[in-house]
Length: 293
Image (cartoon, rainbow, N blue to C red):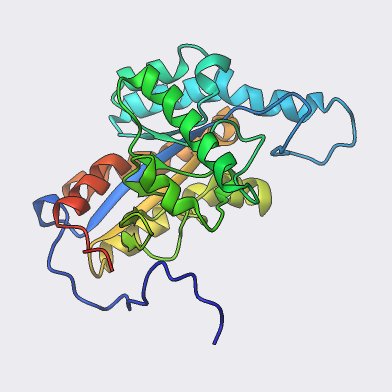
């Protein structure tokens, strides 16, 4: 037998559940926007094109465009469409881009933690080092927002064997690192259950546009196709998630294509629950978390 993570059992998609989303709807939709900070020519990076130059001014400034320009363009779009958004926040962004997260908060965004910066990951960290990383990110966000974040997405979707336990220990209610289902799934941890919400690695502009070199039009088409298929064949209560990065789809020529897809999501309100990760997690938790095993 292959090694098991021991976090959740197999559950076929056809297995019935006894609850639905609010209003009896079968589909929940959320859009997540990553707001990230990177060190200048140090640590891990996202690259538009490979560069051997040091310092790598080209790729750094391309990423920095996201917080200076792209995120503001996206905010205008979300406001125009009255579309809820979840911010996945590197805590360093509060200092790196003052006023940006505050503007999204004023527009009603839910704010989830995304580590300290995206120049680092949790992979391979010692227990106390990882605990300190989570604690620092949580503390900074709580200081600005007046309450600690409820959700966590690891920088670079990286975990150690202890991450779920540390998240529960730190007060987190849900995590977005696990992408094995269209439904929320309860993870088993040594500190009690932790809810894993679907976070798409397919409808993700970084993976689709930067890694796989798909066009902005193809990305927008994929979002609409996913919506139409899930509306037509929802199955049990499921989640459609879209993951955006401000330096990618905040570019005007990509946003032009993306706006059509976001407008289609917003227009699905009569058939689907268009919401945030915080609201989805709270709704699932209200149905009752599993008893510790």
